[in-house]
Amino acid sequence: MAKAAPSARAWIGSVVFLVLAPGVVAGFIPWFISGWRWYDWGGAACAVVPIAWIAITIGVGFLLHAFALFALHRGTPAPVAPTETLVVTGAYRFVRNPMYLAVLTIILGQALLFGSWGLVPYAVMVLAAVVAFVKGYEEPSLTSTYGQQYLDYRRNVPGWWPRLRSRD
Image (cartoon, rainbow, N blue to C red; front, side):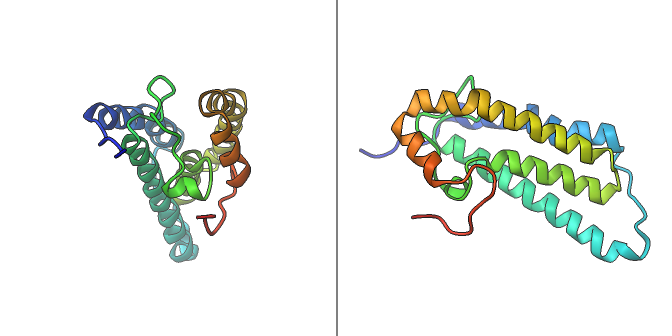
């Protein structure tokens, strides 16, 4: 049986959730904390600024990739409108939580770019919140919904430290 094409509703829902969740967590709140004011790194700028931009760019790229995968699986990352199937393709072959890692990478990239050390404890708080959410809600919910398929996936794919090669 051929997989159904992603629906407009899945794409719209994913874009709306992208703006509301990571857009606020990795965009609005870091702006509020840092003011997005450039930091004068002096002579270190030639090293620090490119590293910061690389982190932000990689984070945004993986975040958009992960959101697109949810739409392609006919759903959204939002718990109220989940996918029809377990998402185990793309970045999800290497790590179970690429969206959360992407958001943290974006926040830490901004901490470097703007020299905003207030973003570092904020990133730690975001990490604590997402780990609590994953352990308290997401993993039990996915186990309940997908059963053995999710348990096998969880056993074979690391949650937080990406492996370099997929098992496929």
